Image (tube, rainbow, N blue to C red; front, side, top):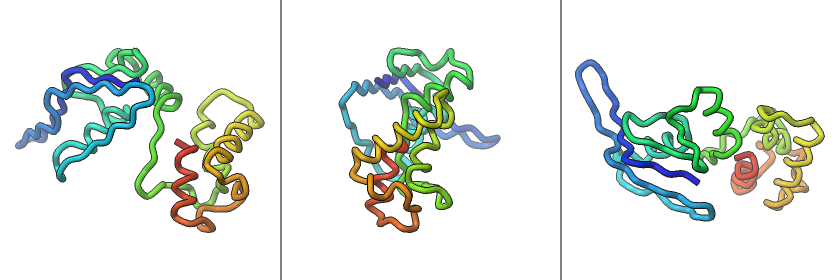
Length: 155
């Protein structure tokens, strides 16, 4: 699903060059759940940002579902991120003014589908995480665990 080949990431300022990642080779296949661990400053967030298409490597290549990312334009990368990559943030980042079902629908707004189809997908995803009874609730009305369970189908 995601493959990194000899990926390197360098951050440069006028006076300093910081090598965040060097010679990273990873192949995450469908169904695998790898973990990323290391001390502060070891490049974990940089790696995840690259794998999530939020940042690009300074060197090396990356593929998502066999598609090389380097040659993609911004729009193609945004479309690929929306269709293939989901994020569950530590603090969930749910939108407090939206109901649970509306929060799950947010990423689907960027896809070409009807309102009815979008709602059907969101409700089915919420059912899978056991939150069918909470679709009209707002994040402030949920427990931390329930908020986390909303974040997964949204991703």
